[in-house]
Image (cartoon, rainbow, N blue to C red):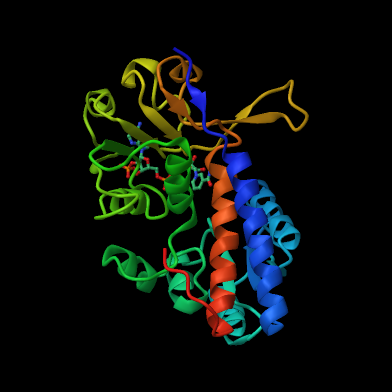
Length: 299
Ligand code: NAP
């Protein structure tokens, strides 16, 4: 068997086109251009490339990106002052702080300082609490993108056994919560695995939907996958490759031969990554709509 690839790039392009139309309609109706404050501290190459991709996508969607680059030695106080300024700026509807922050900076405190109505990443305690309670909120972008990919793939979640590998606050835990919600896109029975899970394969082999967000290439091998399962590979790992132009290539968390067993599979790159950016654009548009007092879109 060879898995059908779930084309995140194509789905993201459709989503971005819809967002672009929404931006144009909002501008025409209210004069408001959605704006996102994008904060990057230091010069980690991976973070820099993520931020550049996000800024390019914002521009293409007709939004404004307020790019803030701070040097490696930025203090906690300086960073909090930048967040306060963005919180107070009426032309900035969303705030994104690219993680991880350099050592010495307290990311939790920085995230807490973001006004919840501008928290388009869905990372603040207020947003996370609302999500857990099933209240209106900005859903975190990667898990939200995963839900859209499952929908696009035609993989039903209701009654499915979903197994999540990885318990981070930005992927594993929120997707576990969202898939177990009552109603559309949820109603799955979810098992959450992590590094202390003994015999990971015993769990992953039971999955109708397998979501892998461990950040380690080779975490899931073909024999750990139930034939026909839908596999969402969230991992983005830079592995050295002397034949590549920049000396590395991207690999997911699943071995290549998982494609021989899975029914459907997201590629890396071109699966979850593009959808994460598309969901960020959706949330930014929504934040601007709310600020303009326009229509509310409930996730
Ligand atoms: P993270 O904070 O690094 O956490 C990794 C999680 O995986 C931890 O919970 C860890 O368990 C678990 N884990 C590690 N090795 C494992 C193993 N062998 N078996 C079972 N569990 C294992 O992860 P993250 O921030 O969620 O990122 C995960 C990956 O997704 C990374 O490659 C990241 O680059 C990628 N990512 C991609 C996107 C995108 O848009 N495409 C977005 C976010 C993240 P413990 O808690 O026990 O240590």
